[in-house]
Amino acid sequence: MLDVALLGCGGSIPVSHRYLSSVLVRYKGEMCLIDSGEYIQVALKELGWGLKNIDYILLTHYHGDHLFGLFGLLQTISNSERTEPLTIIGPKGIEKVSNAIKLLVPYLPYELIFIEQPDVITFLDLEIKTISLQHTIPCLGYSFYLKRQRRFDVDKAVKNHVPKEIWSKLQKGNTITLGDVTYTPEMVLGEERRGLKFSYITDSRPISEIPSFIQDSNLFICEGMYGSDDDLEKAQNNYHMTFREAATLAKLGNVDELILTHFSPKLENPEKFLTNAQEVFPNTVLGTNLLVRSLKYPD
Ligand SMILES: [Zn+2]
Ligand SMILES: [Zn+2]
Image (cartoon, rainbow, N blue to C red):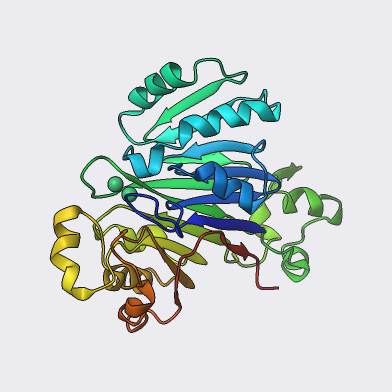
């Protein structure tokens, strides 16, 4: 099971009823935080998943609404008796973030590891991929994928004359040679099964690479800075999206659910514009503070 919490849904500046957009992903008790704007500590406290097990902090980009909470958070994590290293990942320019941390929170009792612009990283058995987005500065989107084990297919194993004593080894992915015969996992495993996927895209124009990047996600959280279609030009000029553009990505990406986030502070009633998204992609919901989804296999 993969738990995903949208901690806040605001963009640009925090407003009283909206924390800034960020996401916490929890898997097997370990956690990855995406972005860390002001008030992140309040949101994390209210969510109640703790701080100590945040192993990765993924930054989409270095605008203040995604970054300014990081320094206080790192300081607070040091009070949680953490001694294991913590990894911070982000687009080009991460050295400046590293320097700012050294200046503002110089005495952390755990090591920080910085990774700039990776294509893929592994977090437990999750594969995290990145995509370069189109914003006013370098910006990354992230997807998390948990591969699902294939079933053991007894009929196939028998048909391929695989000796019973090596069944479990093949099921675990090993290739075994007995005498002149080589037995592969393929000889005993059933069809590929759909894994679990979560994708997060914020602060970008809806570029053509996004649909394949988010393809078949169980959950897609995407920015919708502007609700009204009339704000399309503003979205283009400021390198953000309208609700309708985000919904179009969800449809092209064939995702199960879209949650909109990163609302403009001027967008007081996003409910008024939800139909702009739902006309294109019906299973769209508006993000709120502390909105949680648990992604599970269907059976
Ligand atoms: Zn932003
Ligand atoms: Zn930005």
